[in-house]
Image (tube, rainbow, N blue to C red; front, side):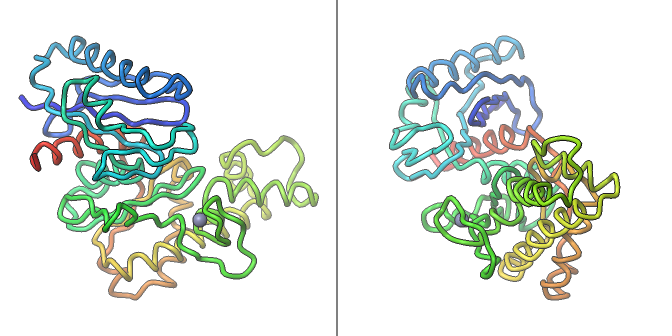
Length: 315
Ligand SMILES: [Zn+2]
């Protein structure tokens, strides 16, 4: 039996899973990332989780072929170096070498949006499709492209960074990347919260509670508040527009949308699709099934395990 250990590093929690060749999760757990304790400490804890998982699943440790890691940051995959992960406060770390030493296994890494895309394309909403465009819409907007079951990385891993497509040239907001009007600043949960708070301050949204998350705005939308509906619709339209630009370039047969905002469900997806249809070419629209992600929080660990399998094949 060939098994792979998927690791999905998050700003607060790190998720791990022991995954079979078929994508079945044999064991799943999570721990506090505590990035401030450093990479060596983190790697030792990953090893401990791997050992626990092997014991809990009752499998032979020798069956675990490799470790795949999804990282929220910019990476130099060829050198195995994490260049910068702002949320972790990690800069220029030899992540692959340190994790390989700690786990005693080959290690492959990718950014978190790419591993989620790989997971969804493998056994999630994109399964069976030849080319899959995945968007992860949460605090930011990430993306990943999977062609023929393989991640398409581009020359230095920047392929699919759709969050930084400039979609709004006038009236756009400042992005962390330094530009104005990125897809991420107009379509993400942060965008929805920002706009809702602005309307609340202007007295156009009910004051019966603070806007803590995008879900508060979605709740107001469902309750029939017109201003909240406007905010949701506007953000969904920017996303649909950005996806149309990508789809015309890629002509994929599946477009999969996940991340926290996608929990708003089919009614929100319909708004996104409306704009997508408006801006994409009819034959592009016809070719692409357009759907919500299916793996939820497991997409990262499953995709990381798949990445590990591809890595072993390439050795
Ligand atoms: Zn940007």
